[in-house]
Image 1 (tube, rainbow, N blue to C red):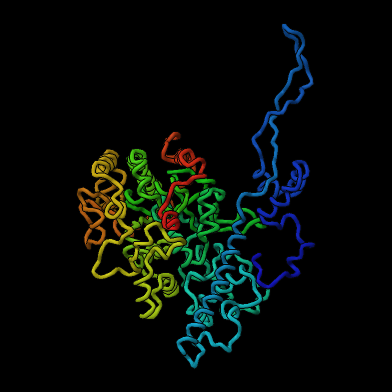
Image 2: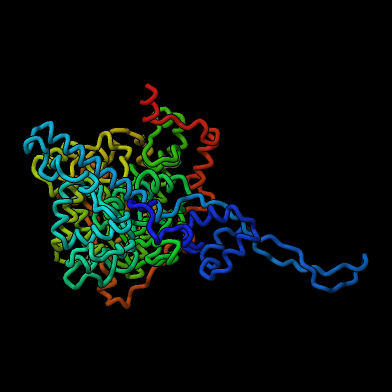
Length: 617
């Protein structure tokens, strides 16, 4: 339950109707009913019959029905039968929890972690003897309970998220609160402030009455920078750092990000239930149902057209996150064979399935090229706004790179900086608002791997700090499959480069140089992004101050075509509509699931991983 204050008159079970139940809870109730009774319950409400009933529909069987006539034939009279399609329903419990419930659970955990954090700081202060044994000035031993310091009492998590976002902007009272706990313990909410407002508005300070929500057009006054009302699509080839950027966006805007992946899939459920990304399966900029869910997001993750998402939607603004194909493909291999986001198989598995991995690498290099050509072409042809971000720039200079991403999200005019409020949010999320001692500790112990929702596979070796170290060196997470792990032979790398060169495209350069490049000149995407090992010296060129020969995309590359065309030349794009770039029978797409299950006795005997091997020792 999201409530922290017990039942209220508004939550009395006797006053709760079937239409007020969340989707998961409603499915539990319906699971006790037969087909006739369950359908009768749903069709009594127009909204339920349109939005909920189809979720329980089965395949349409052909049911025989008499037409009331007869016809004669060689073998006698036969009744003329008409086959009538009839929809059947099966009422079973939903395989995933409601997004609202997951968000309430996440916020409840963060409130509990705040209490633990405060108590720990108190104890450390007592041990140091600070302030006459009272610890930090924010945590006197004689003060009220730690819960009272961690959050305002008398509100549930939805109300607290709404209230604290108000105070983030307008109340000086929260300035002391924000120094108590890190940004990772702040509460999240749905886009446009879709949280339940406190019933007692007198609890709000007068200056906090006007809400300023991110991902909302025209809210908060002209002096505020707000994101556009359109959904911002965060597109990337799998294993390109999408989760890291989503986590940074959520912590900065305090708004949940969505995903068009089916929420009942194993990897999606892991992100939602274990890694705090509760917006899996949510894509709409507006709520699907005013009662059954307030889920409302402004940024949606997608892997389309590498694979099709669960529902189509429209966008005019795209963030294209690009990672070098060598590391991305190696991580994709581990994703497929372990069915997890964080596990890596041991070297013996690479040796055992060397031919399989080599064939996957060559095939996926072509998929990687087609994926990025698709988005570059679509944005150029439709006049869409695009922000191209390299993963390598994000991990080597997360401060400068992420600040530019936020400028795109908030539609800051070219040449202008983030306003004071958003600049403060960015610095807080990246830990740049701490004192010198805390920042030095962060530089030693916290790299970009700890800014995401989970520690990636390279976290044990990725010690690159938020600010680039001196002297500069290539972070361990960049080119790790090439230098440290050496996953590819020289022959395989040559064949991967040849595969990318064979798909060289002139459309990828069209307009990407601001009109100075020639669209008739063909170029390999590896060179455009600076990923060519043979001619550009990747990954060592990542820390170079100058772009490599033939490299166009470096840092954050933003193009606002819709504004330049006055909005008239922009053709919105329908995501998840059309054919995927993978062949239907591609053995290295979703078919990898069947291959893995065949090799592991249906996942009963999983492949050995590095973490499992360490635990066994």
